[in-house]
Image (tube, rainbow over all chains, first blue to last red):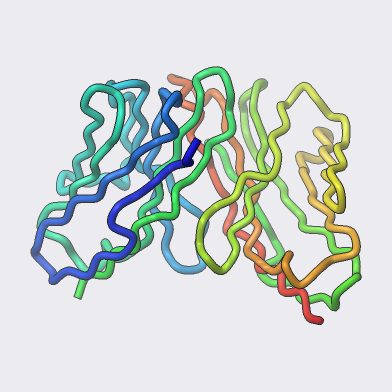
Length: 113
Length: 118
């Protein structure tokens, strides 16, 4: 069990560019979550997958954000036309359907210049 | 709507002191779960404990203990004989079956920065 992994760990981009992040959950976990954390705040829920189905999206997830989880394994989070306000740590977590605790990856820190 | 309040923004103690981190929550759900996570300077959130709303027994794990009081909607966390390695941001979180769905998303407090000085 290697834990949740995320790639890249850091991303610096210019405003207006598109970025894509990847999350690999713990292998037997069928639930996958994306959160966003800004400085001095707790993580905020963005979206959730059970297997390959995206079951909920937060109001925080504007039309510029899209997430996928093909085949119910890894997930990607894409941000189009990035804005400076998108600068944050993007966290991925996974859990087993019958357990409630979520295990988090190390996060991807996005800086939009 | 669910809400978690961690009123203590920062706490500073000297090594070996006991310290309690407060957490107060709001939810309309009858079934819910409470969590504590630790976020050390490296940034990765580490799961510490989960409690469900039907289990009000306090729990002790080594130097850590948790006090769940449903009557006051509180789930406080105590570190006994603190150590420098305990320095981190600690988050309290809540999940439950919001009306209209049950996705078990976590609602986090803003966190408490604990600094343990040698």
